[in-house]
Length: 181
Image (cartoon, rainbow, N blue to C red; front, side, top):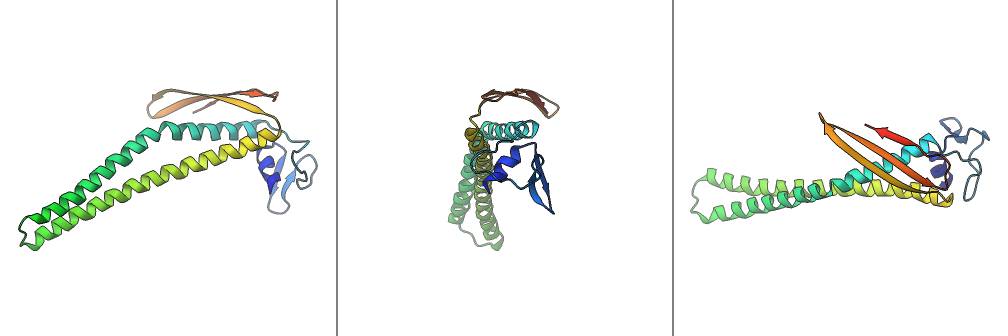
């Protein structure tokens, strides 16, 4: 339902198990075609917009390290597989040495699996963050609202990163400055 996307950003949204999604102002279910005439985009909207932009920025900042980890793990995995295979060129008559060889090759495949798992996890997070942002942007486009995010990552202290998010809006009256820790 397209109305639910609008209502997720609205301060007038009421959701309960008995009635479902209703509007606080009209006390009815959302009933509009393209835009809602009584939509109220305030704290809930801005918080979702900030979170969507922040998540996407964090993922993009971690892209290089994720790819570096992926390629390093792939190289280690293939090296173990090749090393385990070449280990058999020795004259092996002992069952224990065969177990070592197989163990080396299996650990190489484990490294390959871990590398692909990490890359797939990164891609899933990236796709989800982009989709969340696109959903919000589509709704804002219908209302003619444009925004320009400015995300400032402060110095990390004791494992805590302070982030200041400033959203500058065009065609929207409310402009706020939030600090997220």
